[in-house]
Image (cartoon, rainbow over the protein chains, first blue to last red):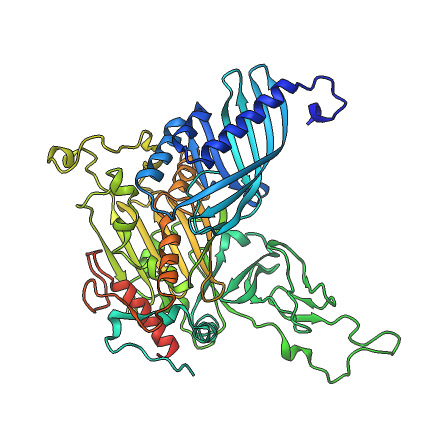
Length: 164
Length: 405
């Protein structure tokens, strides 16, 4: 992105840090099992979609998980808590290489890399997912209007319960 | 020859060594996947263009599926006649011919060896003797058949025609879904930590649905009054189960005092809104064909699932979700929302990978103990109850027949 060229004097350090903080808080919420906080990272009509780089490259719309609006995100959490059955597990998110671009007065685009390590109760640890977050963030409320999680691999081990 | 023997109880027992034995796994490759079974290869829609190809697997065997320039479908083993290297290393694309990268031996869309690089040498030196016959090691070619947009292949000349293989119980249930040209929406792979048969066993197990997958019951979408049934082919190999759409969207359960109102309710139930596009009032239909194919209609979510064994305790499940080519915008969006129901993150499918993995781990030290599969007795056949394991017994009847066990 233009504003990241290093020669661009418009680079907004404060905004960069604010976006990185948002990504960090999001990762912390998921990694510490505070799933109930997850919908609140999104705007009322915020969209969340997990897909694969392969489907994106082929122009195919299929999501692995897709929610339109906080209500659907809340339903996902309710289902994980009360309906879906899966082995106890935790994630550790690593988010890095955050590039931001001011889109309009009230919106910022962000692209960031992620790694998610999955830790099972018996200690078994694996690299569960890697990819990119492609986000549109609304200012000043600092919420995701859209978060697209593009996984590098088309493979998912066993199941994907906790969101990425 | 396999040294194993089946438990005396017969159809109601499945010994755990079937999921663990390396020799059984190797024999399955020969007797089932490379034997007289029809294996799912792809959707015709994935090979729409003349000259197009994609790579897949039949059991352990890497396979190239193609549509030749004249439009005819072919499938052949992805193994060069020369040194055995993969001939095609791309997932999909279009090609005029297939060149093995190792020594540039060339194949046509049917898998025929058409050229050996420097076969006659250069300037009279080198090359192969005139009587050399590298074609003797040519990649195997499949009999390919396409049925309602689904492409299957078998290496057996003695396998019955595909229609007859599927049989009259299941064929109409396949046709009811594949009513018009389809459009691929996307694909992904779910890696399951278990033997491939545990997944097929799970798919055919109508008994587990409302017990393992609590999404529908917890959010009061399932009703005990739902009508449905199960079909099993005469040889037990294939099955289809369905449930009808429930008209009653009221709160009869609450009025009857059977459930507390609003204990659990979806804030946005839009993801469940079904249009009865097939016009027969069916909410869910799960259909399986031996050895490793599943076709599902879950409301307006449609998908082909291909089961690919990767060793005794690992299975890849390739999901291809599709819609119809003439879907309008509302249906296109509905299918994407309902994609939430299925796949590795599916509200009503994510548990399957976990449960079958629990069996693989649970039976680790007990190869000679056996599953108890006695719901609905010992019979194998169609019926109107889903509290039965009839289709599971069918799978094992078919498997034993192929394996001569």
